[in-house]
Each structure stands twice: as C-alpha cells, then as structure tokens.
Amino acid sequence: MFGASADPYLQKGEWLFGTAARGLRSHDHYNGTVEQVQRQDNQTYVINKQYALDLSGAYAVTRRFSLALAVPLVRASWSIPLPVSSTGERSEQNAQGLGDVTVTGRYWMFNPEVHQRGNLSLGLGLKAPTGKYDVTDTYPDRTGTNPQDKAVDQSIQLGDGGWGAVVEINGFKRIGRFSYYGSGTYLINPRDTNGTPSLVVGLSPGGVITPAQQARAENSVPDQYVLRTGLAFALGKSPFAAALGLRMEGLPRYDLIGDSHGFRRPGYETFAEPGVYYSRGGDTWSLNVPIALKRNRRPDPYTGNLGDATFPNHIYLVSFTHRFGATAGAPPSNDSSGSGPAPVAGTAAACAQPSFDSSPGAP
Image (cartoon, rainbow, N blue to C red; front, side, top):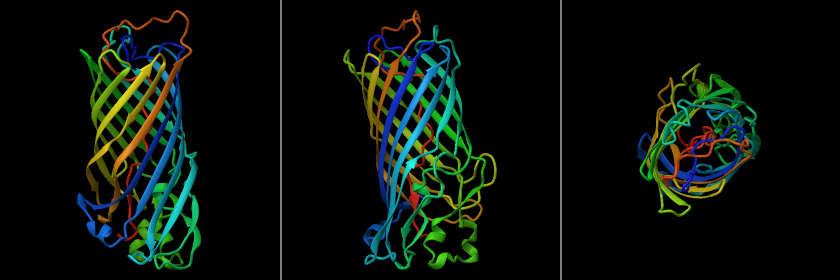
C-alpha cells in the first residue's frame, strides 16, 4: 500500500479483493540460451498468446494470519504453419475457461505492531485441479492434412491435472522513502503425467509416434516457480509510486517430489520489471511491464532432449485491489513516513504458467 499513512498489513477482520490481468505474446525461439533466428527467417515460428484474469480475495483472521482464494480465468492460443514451412497455412489451437484454483494461508513471522517497517511472511497453499487439462480443438497433423479434434498444446491447457502444494515467502524492508521487497512462489506438483496426449501425438499423422517419442506421449505435471525482488519508492507526497525490480519465471527439469516423465518444457526467463502504482484510500492500481533479459530452454528430463521454446519479449501485468471491512477499533497504522509501497498480506499471486512454450519442429 502507499501514501502518507499506509499500513502494510491487513487488520483483523479486514478483507482484500483483487483482480489482476496478465497478457503476453511469445514468438522468438530459443534452444538453451541461443536464439533460433532461422525460425523467423523461414516463417516457421510458433505464436503463443496467453491472457489471464485472476480474481482473488483475502481475509485477515488475525493481524498476522490471513486466508486467500485465487480463481484464474484463462484464454490462450497456439499456432504454427502446417506443414511446417514458409508456405504452410498457419493453424491455430484455442482454449478458454476456468484455471486451477488456489487456497493459501499466510503468516507474518514478526509482530506487525512492532515491525511496521519490515517483515517476512510465509505461505502454504493448496492448488486444486479445477482447470480442464484435456482441452481439445480441431487442427491438422504436421503434414497440414487430416484435421481432427485433438488435445491442444500443453502451454495453453487451462490446468495441469494435478493437486499441488504452493509454498511462498514474501518480505519487505522500508528505509526512508524506499521499500525493498522480495518474494518467491514454488508450486509442488507430485503427479507424474496426467494422461492427456501431448502435441507430439497431436501432430503425428494418425497419432502414430515412434518408440523414441513414446517417453513424450503424455503431458507431464511439472513444478513451477516465480521469483521477484526490487526497490519501490513514493513519488513525493503524491498517491503515485514507482518500482524497479527483477523477475524470474521457470519450470524445472525435475520435480521436487515424484517423477518427471512425459512431455514438459523445462526452462526459465528473467526480466527487468518496472512498475507504477496509484493508491487512494483502500484502493490500489498497478501496472508492471516485465521486459525480457535472458531466456534458457533447458534440456528435457531423463532424455536430455534439447528441444526449443518460444519466449515473450515482455509481459503486461495490470491489477486492482480494494481493502474493506476492518474490525471496529482495529489499531491504525503508526507509520507516517510516506515510505512507499509494501506488501499487504494476501496480495502475492499464485504461481502462474511460465511464459514460454516449445515448438513441434523440435524433436
């Protein structure tokens, strides 16, 4: 929150409603950290578009402990010329609907009444497989013929088909008019594969694959993570604030718990993340535009298959939060320094689908 009397904590009995929109377009291919410029030159690149609207609510059970619910709505598309050549007609797959819902409890480690200028919160949540993980659409095989209704690409499936545990850490420290912040979210998915045929099967004529491709015939249920850190600062005594940070989104080669078989796209992308915020009363608006710094499509687990993947050059993140319903007589903030933004319990977003996908042109 921001402003001359900003309180970084929810009061007992207070609610926080939030809505956040995320949009991106991926089309630049990478193998490891090397850009595959020939995909652009040959006009055989994938276009992956992902849009999500997250609806969330948090309730402060006490000054230190809150419960939060996050409900994502997703719309996405994935397209490539088929056959995979400069003369192929671009074929598009689409998916839209409810994603995987998350419930999270968060606890401030230090007493908020004493630690107004810095604290650390830990969170533990449950991710339910409410998103459809076997969405289908009609598209041809890699020869550009025989269009049939088949499972869409893994990167645009609405869910991953597994129950998961979400582990979070969030912290901030105010120094003068500046706030240093950091957060990490890791989604643990113990399930191995979900039974949905992968794009390897979808693009194979007649759905027939070779023995060497059998290991990638079903979609994996991978772990995911998001890391953020940076510096935020108030712009004078205005209701505006700005931030500059670093962001990292990724999908590991191997899961923390359970096996890691099936079709997955391990890798990560790092971003510079500038942002601007506006706060008035209990309302806060924000705009962040992470700008790509480094992309790395890591080898597949077990087989070491290099593959390739498309990564976005930037992401658009827009959010709005509203605080209301504080318990009568709850203690007001004792901070009047105007020191800029600090996290509010319950605002950390659940781990999202990483912003990259892979190309069927890679084995």
